[in-house]
Structure formats: C-alpha cells, structure tokens
Image 1 (tube, helix red, strand yellow):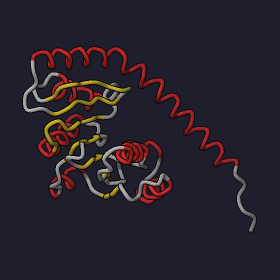
Image 2 (tube, rainbow, N blue to C red; image 1 turned 30 degrees about the vertical axis):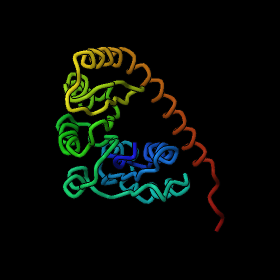
Image 3 (cartoon, one colour; image 1 turned 60 degrees about the vertical axis):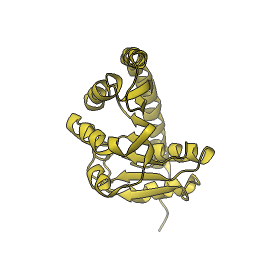
Image 4 (cartoon, helix red, strand yellow; image 1 turned 90 degrees about the horizontal axis):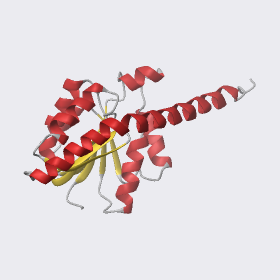
Length: 210
C-alpha cells in the first residue's frame, strides 16, 4: 500500500518485528516502529528477564533490517500520545489483560488508515485478546476480511462493512475458535522445544579458563 507506516506494540526480542520488517522490505519499504517498555511484562517474568532492548537491537541488526526498524522504549499509551503518522498496519502484542488490549485498540484504531490492517497476537488462549477481537473485529461494522493465522487475528479497517462482509467475519470467528487453538498449541510446542534446545546448548558451552 505505502499509505502509512507499520507499528508493533510489544516487540520483546524482535522475532515478529523482524518478520514485519522483512515483509516491508519485500513491499513498499515503509518504516516499522516497534514500541515496548522492555521490562516487567508477563513474557519477561516467564523467562526471568528484566531488560531486552539491547538484545532486540542486536537481533534487528543481525537480520539486516536496522535501516527500516525504529525500536522505541515506551508503553503503548505513551507511544500513542505522541505518534502522529498514518498507520497502514499495526500488530498488537502487548499486555494481554482485556482492559489493556481494549485500551490499545482504542488508542491506535483512530490512527489506522481506511483499508489498513489491525492484527492481534495470542487470540486463541489468552482471554483478553480473544474477547477483544470477537467484540471489536469480527462482530464489528468497522472491519472486513477478518481472518486468522494460528493465534493471530487480523482484518482490514473500513468506514462501514456490508452485510456479506459481516457474515464472512462471523464465519472466520467460528473457524478461528475451532481451529486456532490447535494451530497455536502446535506452534507453542515447537517454540518451546527450540527454546529448550538453545538453553541446553548454552549450558554445555564450557566456561573460559582463567
């Protein structure tokens, strides 16, 4: 499209950030803004990490997308208060509490251009994102082409969808609720296996002799 930038809410170490940037490089090469406070999130607590911004920047550099990604240490609310560029795609993967996801939606929805995409992560298992996308995406008059890929739900913003588009959105929601959890389970098992394998390799590296 090239009518706006890409925004990510919740970048952690940059896996999704890099994929967004690679997609942008293959397309219109629009800027990617990655916002994350990089501390105190549920993901940080799960992995026992208090600060991930430096690792994010390293991963972005190694992936060859540093020229297109602008990583920023900021909460979603703080970022939205000073962000004025039009957005053609936003990927929301921040705080998964329902009120927090709802706040993210309400903060960023007005900044998305007509025809732009809003995408949400972890919408199959986490009740906050799951409830939000059901209410504000799939059952809304403000989106069309609702779909999903694993736990990611996404749709295009429109001024007003048609009756047929609303029906297709509802059917997509039913399919997501049936198939999505299984896809998410498989992906999670693979990711956990990869993470455990990396941890084992790290533990097997001998310490340097002094």
